[in-house]
Image 1: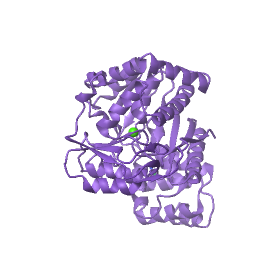
Image 2: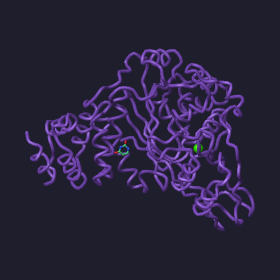
Image 3: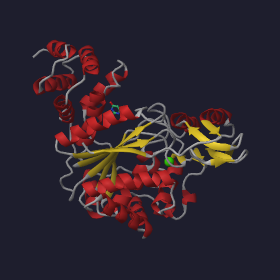
Image 4: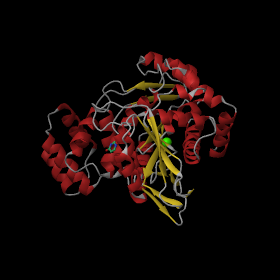
Length: 433
Ligand code: URA
Ligand code: CA
């Protein structure tokens, strides 16, 4: 088999065989196929697309390019949740203990990564003592005993994806549905999930800016998952404005605690209940979505979800007293209100730009070497559709530096006030096949 023939075939719009896809992924991982041929194939896929069979084959070839996590020692159906990423997305912190309180095993592997705020692990590290350096055996024991644990990224998972994603990044081939879908799904499958719930975001703060693109990606991922024996479903959710009120690491931990108490923002709570119901049904801990939702609301009301969060923190060295004393979380030196310049209704909060404002304060990483300031960020007081009076605070800046003029300017540029505005719809669609 020759790589040049595979490239030519795809260039001419033909279907690649399983053997050809495996040949490419294995060769590229080993280094016997050079970057220039891989980038040429990626560009051919970009223009010619792949059918469902090719997409599943590409996904499984990437899964098999490295180690995979075996979670079979954990009892029950392991359901993983994946979000395509947004601004102030606190859902994992809430969902993990919440569904675990209903007996759904949550064996979460998480990374740090780049972005407006840190990843799930960074956020959790704003709790004194909390750590994810546990052995794989401890991880499995904790999930079996208490249904929830988080471990840092271990092993050499999907090296083919790592290499190909980096190549796509510099060859104009990131934005291809078959390549994105196989990239994301390969990582979830390699991490050992039996079933997968996808939260595909749409809008300014999302990877997919339009509903149509988000739906195409969701359908592609759901098809891949189901075709390789992992029960998969997706929801399309709004990311035109940030989710919840908090954007920042410790601030989001506080927001997660509030939500587990039933006192969280309306949109975050609704998203958590929607995703959580799907997870509970996939894990067979409820027969219908309505039953699942009822049970989730029950464990929020009776405090079991919050107790599960405390136990989870304690199990991994964290000071669980922060749950009752959130002032123990890292605190910013300055709290600066940003007042509305006119009266009316908030009509737009541009999610990605507001995320960048949080990053300017130090809440996230632009490069892998950056350090994160866990205390800083933004707390929105108004969301799209809310009434506001001139002089009333739109949000509060939490900063460790007194001069925040650049952040303020960015905020004013990206929050609009009009004479009329409606609340955006949060859940755009549910996709099951
Ligand atoms: N996220 C991924 O993990 N892979 C892609 O290709 C795009 C976004
Ligand atoms: Ca939030």
